[in-house]
Image 1 (spheres, rainbow, N blue to C red):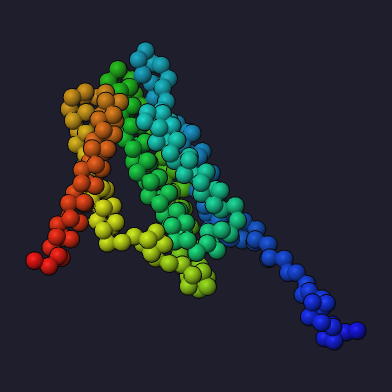
Image 2: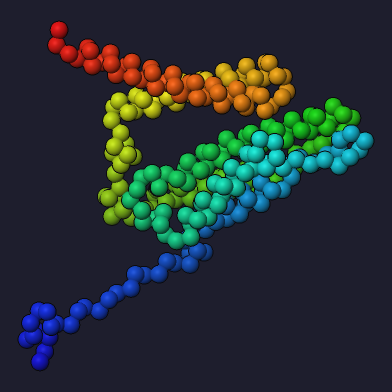
Length: 248
């Protein structure tokens, strides 16, 4: 008996089709760029950013993982990007937050790079003040070029993502369910938190001079105080707006 003459529940199921395998990494430019960037950031963060001589001609070096540990954050972001590049997840996801992850990691990496280079320069100044010398190395250029690859990979993904995925992708504020007041809350918190952190760091520098730990601690306290102030400001704005909208 042919399949067409049999009852529907007896008919042969259509053959299962396996999903197409991911293309090799070297044939997927953004994934390849992210992996190369992750390797470059990791290796560059471990390498010395400054080398020289200190007191009594002692050999000195400074790595981005030292000081306040910007290199640790750089490596953490690199590992996240390498994990995301293991398959075509960044191509196929419809979550806008996930799509923006490479951009966020790149932006944070730029801030960490600036901090690491600043502290490398400070360390050279310390060696020089003790009668030694020092110079910056090419490791920072390795990390800088790798960060540039992160942004290139993000732009490539944004430009080449399929229309079907674009159609399913919702704006970030819709995906997160942000309302007008939640945006006011976030904006106020960010502004006041940043202002509090800056004020705390400045006070720490003025009080403790070159003792970085005190400045960092006061900056963290200022951040939390600023966040609390931002929440209060946002709530006050919302309360005033509601009172204005009520009939007299």
